[in-house]
Image (tube, rainbow, N blue to C red; front, side):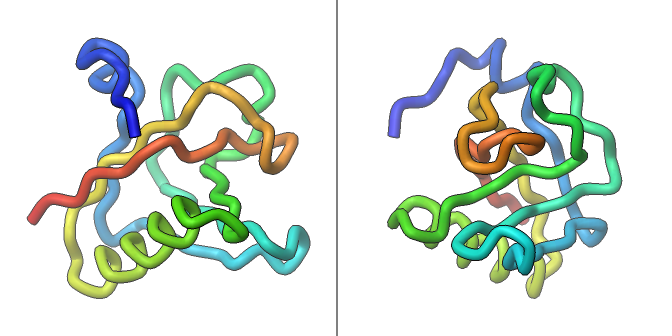
Length: 102
C-alpha cells in the first residue's frame, strides 16, 4: 500500500492508546469503526464523527480491524491516518493505514 509523504502523515496521524473503541457497526453492517477520545485534526468536511471507518468486505479492512483488536488487547500505541474521504460511511473518514508501536 503506498504511503503518503511524511509531512502529510505527521499532520493527520493520531496516536491512540487505551481510549480506542472498536465497533462492528450494528447500524452499518459490513463496516467497523474505530473511535478515539482525542479529536482528529485535518479531517475532511464530510467527517462529522470522531471516528474512522473500515470496510470489512475487503482484505485490508479485515487486516486493519484484526490489528486494532490485537493492539487494544496488548495496550499498544496505534497511529492512524485517514485517506481524506468518506466513501465507506458518509459521515466518517475512511481509515487509510495504521502503525502499531510498543
